[in-house]
Length: 515
Ligand code: SF4
Image 1 (cartoon, rainbow, N blue to C red):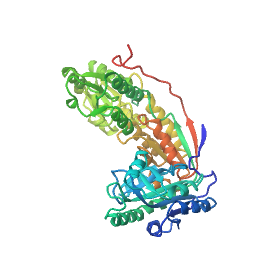
Image 2 (cartoon, helix red, strand yellow):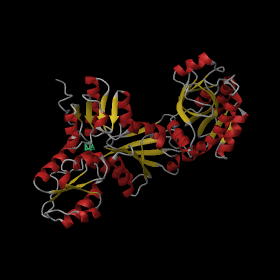
Image 3 (cartoon, rainbow, N blue to C red):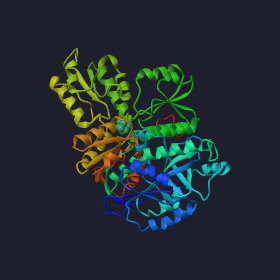
Image 4 (cartoon, protein in one colour):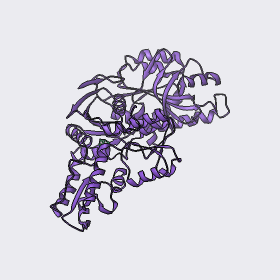
């Protein structure tokens, strides 16, 4: 699949972009110029909508590559204080709306620089806003108001555009408040502190190719686990308790929390008789027994492929084997699997750990694997085990699941042709972390990102092809968000490389199936 992504992107042959910053007032332009350090041109475009519209007519024919509008603005929401920065996700004057795709990248970069930042819509108004109209604008979704940005931003046309406003006044400290002077000074200081980020935007800008690895994102076990929580919420109503994160992804967890799920670390946090869902990573028999003892309404979202490893552990242990589990200490799946037969199991994290095994009978050693390991790394540990115990029994079928294997093969296929690999996934997602390591082992620098705001602009300098994938617990929408944000740096040509297609689906547990 090849698809050009055009929102706010430039033409495909766009050269490395030159930055033009429009600041309505001379004081604002001075603050920006000092922070920018010569990385772009700063133009004073005049105060108010009429001057901005006149400037916009001139700008449309200007040869800049990137356009930023930077100045002070009136905060509309109660959480803002003077000196806070607002990065516009879009800017509108009611008749024209311009999307600013780069907003998450700039907001993330500003936060990492230690500045207080909010990303959201900017509204351009014809006159200064007082109390009631300020509230009205906030009710419409805007975060900050100004009198210039919308016509200027619209003049960028297809070229990338950013709007940066430093808050000088807020609902609590309005324009006629005695603190307006200190608020204005705080805003100018923030504007100066933020301007180096505009320089980094310009340095990272340019046309790019994105190689999308396929398959990527949700696997069947994650889809099933999320669906179980959704069904339990529908059928039993909120709150629904979930022991541990249902899957290791911040977006999934935040979304379900909004809908009434309550995530807890231990069953002791669940009220007696309440409904509790066990996560996709599985639980030990001890946890199940405690839930039964407490009379909890337990629904099990353990992935069937994790449950299969649990069953193998029970079977080997019952047959008198020492069961070596190849996996990572502390991971919930590993804790759950080890809990199946704690007296008969040992954890192997590396090939060196094999030396520590002390089986009662060296002829009765078996091994299992965590489902989300790197295939090549796990093979090294199992080879070391078989070297020492040549008769060691392997699992009946691969423990490392199809989704983990497919995603690793897919990222290997695109990493070779990429200057940089981005993996969408949360830091505690084992399979996502393994994707980063797989790309790095293929010789390509790689980073794990929860979303576009984690992308550091410095990573993108000199990078023309980005390999992009998502771990099995990361929603597909995050990948779309990342591509959209990259289009705020210039045109993006997206090509998908699919190494295999997946059509696995797991049935739901009887507790949530329709009667
Ligand atoms: S990554 Fe594999 S084992 Fe884990 S939930 Fe997905 S399908 Fe199941």
